[in-house]
Image (tube, rainbow, N blue to C red; front, side):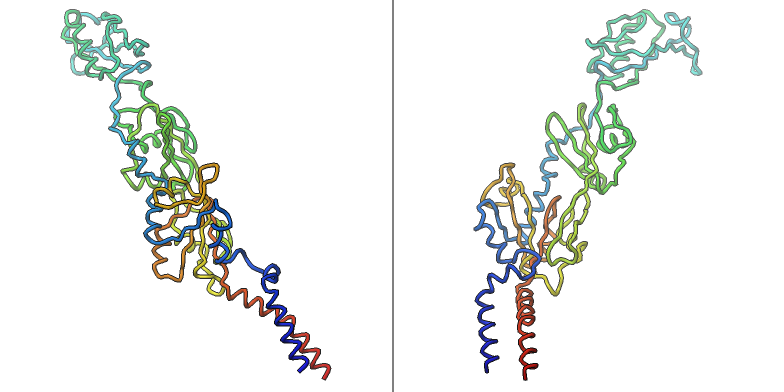
Amino acid sequence: MDIVRKMAFLITIIFLFLPACSYFIPQSGPTTATIMQAEQADNNITVVKLTPALAMVLGNTKDNIKERLNLFKTEKYSPSIDKGDVLQIVIYESPPPVLYAESSTLTSGGVFAFSVPPQIVDDFGYINVPFVGRVVYVKGKKPHEIAREIEKNLKDKANNPQVLVQIADFASSYVTVFGHVAQSRKIALTYTNTTLLDVLASAGGVTSPVNKTIIQIDRQGNKISIPLEDIIKNPEYNINVKPGDIITVSFKTQLATFLGASGRNEEIEFEAKGITLSQGLGRAGGLQDDRAHAKGLFIFRFEEKNVHEKAGLKPSGVAQDGKVPTIYNIDMSDAESLFTLKNFYLKDGDIVYVATAPLIQYQKFLQLINATISPIFMIERIGR
């Protein structure tokens, strides 16, 4: 009976000091209960219970690309001549040539052609044409309009003149492309070179993997970033560019860290366009059946304040950089949580944490008791 009383006394002491013992029992991180109370412990932290509907709203606010894209949509650019452009002009005369007899050549069509040296539009919008002079104002005009103007000036000087005007260099209409492209340079906009993909092709294409490439457009201080994969797959994203646009091509590696009772504790690299939480968990090996707490799936993130506002959330506090420390919780014991996983998108820098089931801590506690009591039983048996 003495051994029984001793055992009972020892067990009572251990249970009384169980809270203190938790500091010594191995565990992979905070418990579900501790995280759910984080908002009370720190007013700047916001804990959000995720539902499929809320996850869909958050997914629709992901980067706000479609909403912001409307600010950048514009009509297809039709180049008009401006200062710095180079014009190629050919003047044709019916035989016999009168004005350009000595410097023209006979074409296969039986007319004489005179090629004017390339003309650069000056700062005032004029060009020089032999026997016409600096009287042709070309700024803002189309090539055929300039041709008619030159013909008008040559009407009484040349024999039935016909003029052809082409733009040899669109020096006034260009965008700047740099970053992960074959050639970082200025690219002229032409009648056929007007969209994002057109410009990227003119730069020799991107040098980084398509699924990890971000295209940023800077237009007069307004910026938008679009994954290249989305631009290729969705024609709506292949917007028209405008002169002066700055296009930056970036190689973007996004990472999310999986910790706790997930299949693997590691950083998961994912595509520039993002992945859902269900995809991320799949790549990390899911949840450990023998350790994970179904109610304890958490995503730690510094969320943008405007995302909280659009989702109808009321953050507890706001950090100095305008981001809210947010903990999203998903109850995996609820069947609808699978829809939540499908609708919730991971972001670069997210920490996905799976809490350990409370029973695991009790198992560890029982192992501690067993390790303490077994020697006492052994001594008692030997004493007999």
